[in-house]
Image (cartoon, rainbow, N blue to C red; front, side, top):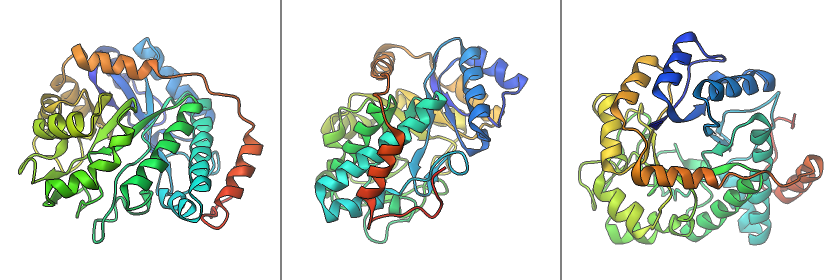
Length: 342
């Protein structure tokens, strides 16, 4: 088993992908819209990927709601963006937290039914004025205590539904002035302010099983390297002041924020302290380079990976109709879907 998570190109595995997965043995797998046509097709793809690997590998997806939702109508419901939970929280704190917990529980029910057991959610990013809108309404608010509370409720909802949460984007993407999918964000804010705001939102969530890094430079701590490939930020901030001891994965290393070949990026992320590298685009040549650039999963990284997967549990019983009705009641005045639930 090697220290990376990979995507695949389409709705079914090709012969090359089967051979690659069998040989490279990635720790985990990630799905995107390009992999999704229907419930039956998606279950079949997930089952086949795990059969090829010969184990119940974790299967990840980005199912936040709002702009970032890989599963949607007509087969799956739409869910609100993070800001809607923030609006509900502002009206009534307990109502907002209950809504966030129920929304995540409903997402988990959709995912668990398919065999997807990891959701790249919640966000603890704290956006600031004039930041790039890549986070925008995905965030729960701009105050770290509020963000952490809603993120915790969402993690609880996922966990109750048998789905592991992935905290992102540690130690914070909220101040990024550009979209890290396209360019490298450089944040010049002083460390004391970062610790009190951006980083502070992650501290109450440090016990979550997994987290995803931010491709962001924080010049007050490391003048050159973004967090994903910065040993200083991983050691001093993520593992240090935030206190996160779970499995640390990179954000997608095919994003344009990072420099060098994908193989070099993979090696740099592992050298910086990431436990596993995430590669998403399904390009076979890049996937091969990543597999060659990462080591077998061993040592502390293997311990953290085992601990994360040990936290997977069977979903608690749920009356879907009753829960959706209650969810809509809690969200009334804060969000209404543009498209009806499936």
